[in-house]
Image 1: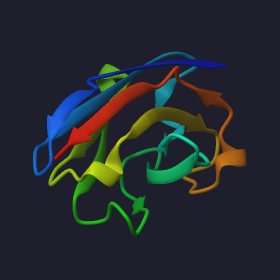
Image 2: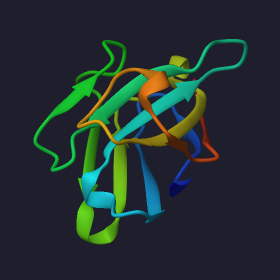
Image 3: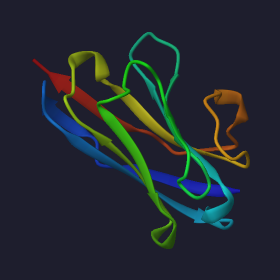
Image 4: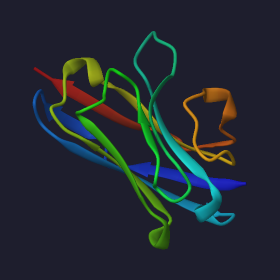
Length: 123
């Protein structure tokens, strides 16, 4: 079991940037794939980005590719989501999650979830 705590959400203007952090504790962080998901009001939770155990492989949803960057620092047990060129459509609660798979785009393959952090993009 891994405990995950997100931080860094807030209110930003369209076109701005925000960096989310996810701090992990519990089982060794190094052997988990990590992902970011987001859920807008009235919508299903959707995949945003994932990163493999060592950071070698990343994968992004089409809606965020080229604007968002996922990274990890295993020494700090932390995963990040750098969000640039933000749009009002990016407004959502963002969740960090861990999986024993190398990486995954699929919600059901994640075992642990954080509490979420709100990101609001205004125009």
